[in-house]
Image (cartoon, rainbow, N blue to C red; front, side, top):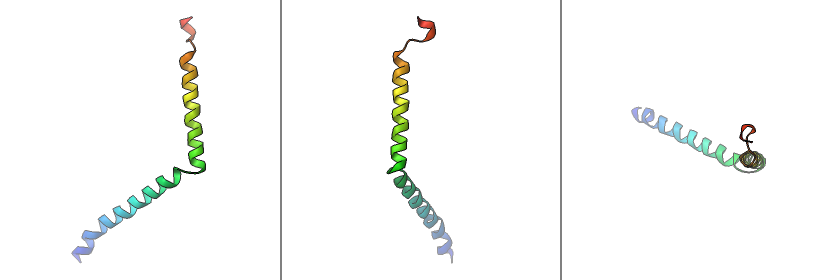
Length: 59
C-alpha cells in the first residue's frame, strides 16, 4: 500500500500540469488571441504617441 501513497502525488501533479498546459494552449488561439493582440497593439500605439509629444512642462 505504500507504493500507492508514493505514486499519488506525482500522478496528481502530472494531471495538474497537463491541465495547465491545455489551458495555456487553448488561450493562445482564436478570439482570445485576437483580443490580446489588439490590447497589446493599443498599448504600443499609446506609448509611441506619448513618447513623441512633449510634456506640458517641457514647452
